[in-house]
Length: 520
Image 1 (tube, rainbow, N blue to C red):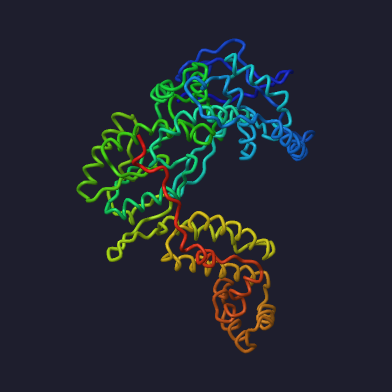
Image 2: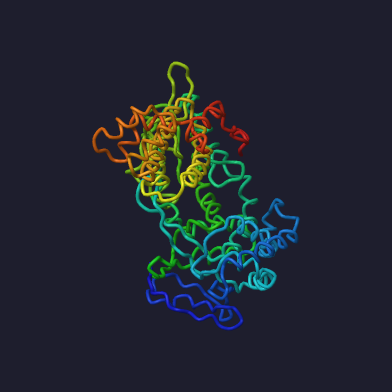
């Protein structure tokens, strides 16, 4: 990776920014890309004190409604090799803008917002179409941000410029119909009609059928190690228009702007964060899926997380060795041996869940993984800081939003996880009690409020003044538990995850469709 310091660049009058010549960076290690002298990149105004984002956002809502009303209606038709042209990409730009605007992403390295783009879309669209059709369009940089990973460490995400996101989305809409019908049904990542829940449903079916061991294959830094040559060759098998292939290649080689301002060139990998990246990752790993199907394996894959289900530990170790050789030799990827293993499904984390087979009944329980439990309790602590200075109602509102979203995903867990749900509810209530006690401050005030809530006078005074205790210790005394009980918080709108799970404990995740036997 070649590195260079970013420089202040002045946008000339006319609203276009020249693209620097490939290979002009000081590192010189990046692959040179031929660029015409007339190559330009669209550049939009950046929000300033004179042009506040709030005012732009209000105007963009009106503009977005006009764009939606005038969007082409013939979107979503099945693509063919002949239709995967740059003309088709240009035709879908408006529909792509609506999709990108609905996601409300952050600005890229140029600081331009989706609100500004929506406002100026009538002017930008013809210029953008002309540049794409003429081959003049050049993607901008990709802003690298780091987010914590659930298992520790950090994951690097790339945020392209808003115009580049629109172009990527248009390309995705053109390419997806070419590959989607041929993807293996056991691939559940980033596909219409499939999700983490359908992946867990299929994995559960495999375990119920007697495949009680899992080969957990972890691909190390998959998105960073994708070979551009192999990916381009795969795309060329179904895309006839070379202009589309060249555009995708330029997107893959877009320079990355690190948080410290350093700019690095890219020679491999697919940046996570762009609309096109999920589809490209599936295209890369489609060969892996076909190899697993050819060998007759039972498997489930979501993005780079692949699980192969076998009947014995011995068979699992044999499959692990064979697949490692295929991935590293044929696909030119790397298997993380430290995170890969052959184990029982209940001992391996898969999309936040574990699977446990009941030997007596033959049924499979969907359990929360230990990592998911730890993350849930940590999130509870983040939502209920002891120094919370707002009102109780505002804190409960934040909690409810998270609880509904959390249970919307983890609610497919079996009824046996009800104990964990009760633990979350109890921990939430105790932390809210500690916040209230801190707000009330004086023990005399606390005692009087508890008495009004129905706590016996003698019990309230005695337990509060029985030695020096912290707010956290007081939050779990019998008197406080009695006064600030579940009914108290329910009246103030606190959602109980136990109640949500009671209503959904008989929920069955959606079946996998189409059937595996129909895949050819």
